[in-house]
Each structure stands twice: as C-alpha cells, then as structure tokens.
Image 1: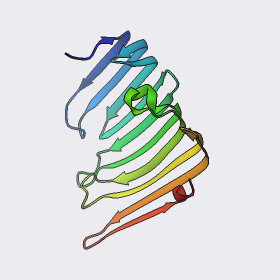
Image 2: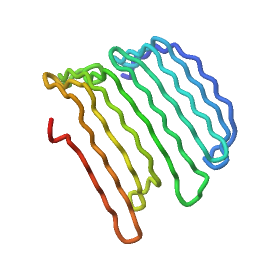
Image 3: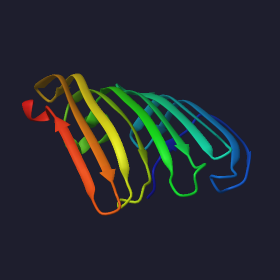
Image 4: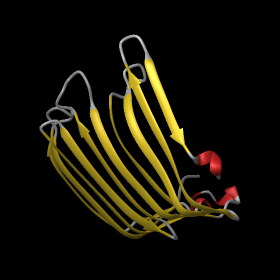
Length: 169
C-alpha cells in the first residue's frame, strides 16, 4: 500500500500570509535523481515567488526521456478577476515512461502557451496555442501541427473558436 519514493531534495520556504492578495513568499525546491513510484526524475527544480498579488512559478525537470519546463504567472491584483499566463514545453515526452500499461511509445515535442482571465467557466476568457513539432506517436511521424483555442465570455454569450490542422495527422 502506498507509493514507494526515494527523494533527494533541498527545499527552502520563506513567507507570510495565505490569501493571494497579501501573500509574500519565496519557495525553492531542488531534487536530484529521485524516484516516485516508477517515475525516475534526473532533476526537478521548482521555484515560486509571490508578492503584492502576483505569483510567479517556474518548474523544470528531466526524467528518463522527457525534459519539461513550466512557467505560470498569476495576477490577483484585481479582486474581480484573476489573470494568468502560462508557457509549458515538453521535449521527448514518452507516454510509456509515465503510464507503463499504455503500450504507447511516443516522442512528443509539445509547447502550450496562453493567457487568460478567470477560472469560472461562465466568465472564462482564454487564448491558448498548442504546438506539436517533430514528434512520433507509435509509428506515426508528426512533422508539426498547431491547435489554437480562443474562448471569450460576455454578459449574455460565450464564443469558442478552435483553429487546428490536427485533422491532417
């Protein structure tokens, strides 16, 4: 029962406050050659800083075949709406490394970027771009493909635009 782990990490947490508006914090976590269940991480770095309603996070990691970078920033300075932006990249992502039972062998190079306002689905405004470049899904080679999602919410309506060449796979 439980998940076997072997963690080699250093962590530093300094801060005060709990609500995003008045939070002042600095978090740094570094891990080298660690195992969580069957996942092996060569390195994992997490940093987060919050002050004056702005929270900035950076995560980078490498595992068996995957290298990843995640940057997400939140802006809580306006009490009526939360703003955020994100930039996520995975290189060499092999689904089989993370889900052994999948039987899928992949080498995916994925970038996801975007910005938005609100998390409430009735007030959500979001623009996001997903790009797949020079990738492989089992025996299928994927040169490059893009999906763009633009979601705009107004008082009486919501508009969802999706532009994609994914059907060309």
